[in-house]
Image (cartoon, rainbow, N blue to C red; front, side, top):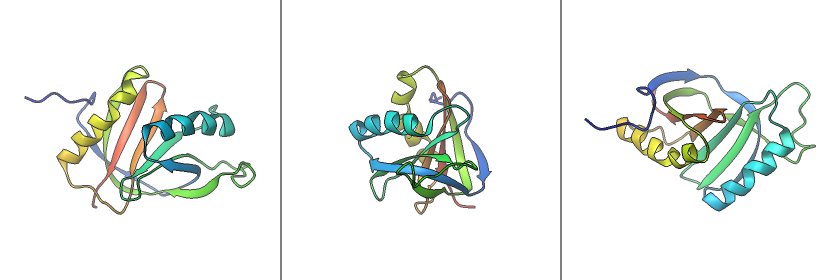
Length: 141
């Protein structure tokens, strides 16, 4: 029996499209590590849901948060975008930083080994709490 990086068996979820404000960088560790602190400081963490979209075709990593009523992405120097809805295979990681971040690549590989991804949509990282990350692999309906 193979062990899993996830705390429970991955499950299928359906998500609606969500309008977000976002900032993108290259999908490279150094760039990602620089992007997160500046984005979090700009938008604030209190009351925010934080996501990242990983587009392997474009080699981009985009951090984002849903737009709230009084948000002004353009004033903050951010782009408006969409967190794509649809069907996803969700896996949950639990653990303390920084070790939890080190398991993301292994988790993505595990999800990709379970079923084919929908290459038209990016993989989603949902930062549920400081010690909980959900990985959402886009899949067909």
